[in-house]
Length: 76
Image (cartoon, rainbow, N blue to C red; front, side, top):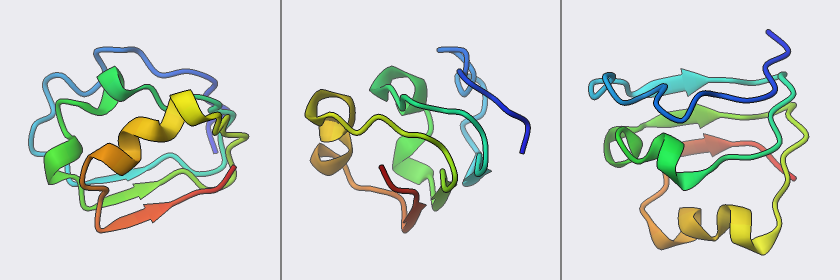
């Protein structure tokens, strides 16, 4: 509920132990792969509900190519 519109590309670079991320109810439209790479393999929960996500095939294809978090919440 912070009205976040974007996240810095290097936000998670130094957060290797991060397992749960709650970004629900913001203004995020994109979820670029390079942002999530440092933590994706160990991520257990990613909550993106309530964001106006742009789910064009090119912006989310990478999620299906990698193992998604145990709990992935959100919709287009």
